[in-house]
Image (cartoon, rainbow, N blue to C red; front, side, top):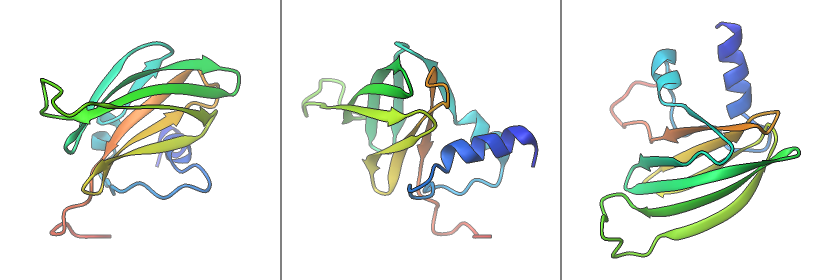
Length: 130
């Protein structure tokens, strides 16, 4: 495994947090699913049946996030979105539950100047485990 892969794994495996719900053996698929955002850049991700829209503000040693969660296919917003405001420490990680075992993983970089976001989907029951 190259150095970049080790660094990425360390960021996502922050202490005292549950391991990712998804096991990805293909590193190119894992890196393709990760998006990086700078402070105040908006993001929009659909994970499972949930849509997450939000942004973050960089602060000393932390990332301050504002995220709205709505039903993914609810264009008219018949079900009101939920708003979350929370902080992730620099180098830390959080997950937002998307239901059915899926989640949106958000990691704050060690310099707290950007966040990395990746969907986590449950592993299909038919997939072989290593």
